Length: 541
View (tube, rainbow, N blue to C red):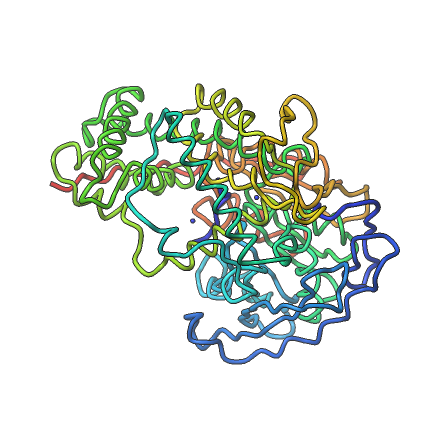
């Protein structure tokens, strides 16, 4: 499941020895002693943004050229789109550029420069140019596609809580076809969509902006490739904020992280059910969490057999209600829609579950990049029996999202084996039990980067995490703090909204603002009380 983009919706290429680039240098190739460094990028020529970006005249746009393959940096080049809003405070207070990535993989921050107009970002926007960009594969940055968008967006679709053997076979076939579509449409370029290359692109962006050192803020997946950047280029870091932290342990990337995500989302799902039960007088869905969950499961089963308006099946219902796990702000509106449906009014549920028209191409593109990065970054089981065993086990304790998450990531079981080229994708050839020991190189393009820095190699960085986050479970933040020497962790106690900073938690916002403006971090551990729970919204009559 995606560690979705925030503020709006998971070391590759370490083959033998991958040394950090000396301060002031540029990205080097992955294979020690091979190739030449990537040429220094020219300064970005900013100008008017293309209409397709839908950005105001206060934002300017440009293009950044980077190598497709950093092991052969003078071969094929690709271009990335970049956006910028100048610091509002003038030369005396300007501290450089602040580059932001909202997560994904597959999300763009092209709209980030607009945040400087909001009150929560006002002081920071006085000191920094706000810089957003579309990472490789995303939007107009060498766009990646694996499937016809209309086929990808086809509705209704089913999401049974306990999938049958026939349903699993259907999903296996769909995943295989999707992986083959990625390979066919992208060709040899497919292997180069990785987190390590995202980090190298980020260093090229730093240089093209004229920044000697990088000030960066990453959320969700943006914390992972930001941490990869810190590992590869510690001498290029000025300040870094990591909000809602992915577990960077190479053994977690990405198969185990997704299994852990299922358990964390189940906890958040039950948090929502407890909140709804507490407001039984409003929603009439049950006085206990168990009753609320039974009411939801009844609707889920009903839509699985008879889609609402012929368009909303159980999969569309699941996708809509998964957002309750990402942000508490969805709790009242989803509860109100479910309550109205149970009482005989399906219109609110229909409005909240129908996909937005016109977004099919962007959704397919985002999913293609997500799949390519996750499948390329590390090893995945190739034996479908392993997927079935592990997800069956997890679904016993976390039934809400486990199987949907498995179907999302299943193309990685059939991912092209890049070395040697043309190897068979028949899963029967790979019978290793990959969860009882370290995952082997089961067809992954690369090995994950061993994220870590030595004491003193990296300036202090700031981490933020909510204790009950579903998308990026809290132990990941503790693990990254351990691996980045000198880092500080701000914890939002008892909270689960994915994205701590610059929301409604004043305590967390103050830590981020102080760090970005002064470089000061709190003690190794700091804590903020949870933001207030949302107030109920009356169901439509």
